[in-house]
Amino acid sequence: MSCKRLYLISMCIIAAGCVSVDPSRFFALAPLPRTDQRAQDTAGTNGLALAIGPIKFPSYLDRLGLVKRLSQNRFAVADNDLWAEPLEENFLRVLSQNLSILLQTDRIVAYPWERSQQPTYQVQVEVLRFEPNAEQIVELWARWSIMDGAKKTISVRESYLTHPARDKSTEASVAAMSEGVSDLSKEIAAAIRALTVGQGRRNASEAASD
Image (cartoon, rainbow, N blue to C red):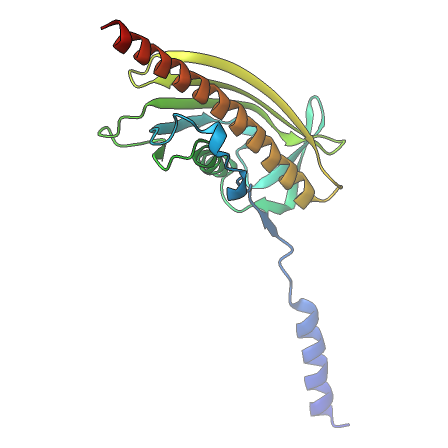
């Protein structure tokens, strides 16, 4: 074998060894499937105008890498398992999609919205905790409020939701996080339905007394 050919082979081997493969993997929360719509659950909410936001997240979750809570005061941040978009934005988008499905309304705007848009209700959420723990159980702890069109707070709630991941993979943890957002969406949707039904009854009573 000639020296030149041996040199070329050697250079190819060295080059192959120097080529690095990006180990990064990207994840995102997923909304409810459209099959989760229930016509019997949406009486009175068709055409409802809903504004979502602001959504407030703790600063420790404002990072690209996925966060895991190892103990009450200790966290681990993944180097290669990353969010495909900022988690706060992903959460807002998925919550909006879920409420659109659950309430069967397309009249949903996300914060910030135009002044000309006049929502029937506004939903604000403060997320206090949203990550898997060392046992692979996702915890979603959030305070949320509903305001009417005049920006008067008419309901304030707190939700603490847990979902175990089906296995120890990051994909399973993110799926459990999506389930947590789905459950929170269902609680908010139920509160909005109750407010809508109550308002409808008051309107009917006022019309009957006139």
